[in-house]
Image (tube, rainbow, N blue to C red):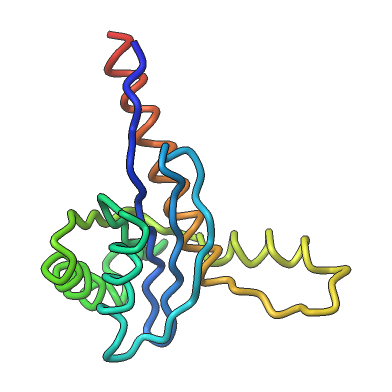
Length: 149
């Protein structure tokens, strides 16, 4: 028995200056880099507007992990942002691990743009897509495991 996930999910890579945003397809199979937004007073409203426009049912925010252990300096800002986003949108906001997503996105994009004239890379949006894709894959795996038991 296959349980389908329906409805879009927004992925967010929160940064002190810039915030990457990604959106899933309706079936929640694929994550697509969408935009990079400035982290300013309009951020919550811009993401809320995107969520309304896309018909999102949930938002996933990357949780800054520290490879050395302990809390990353931005962890508290992400927690406050996540709660504010939940209040602003009325949607469930989940925090998920984002360890190394920016570095992984940068490597993947650099390989793709070596022959391009425009080498500007939206690493933050690509990182948001990686965060979201990891979340979507995990959700599908959990559903598969729960229905096979």
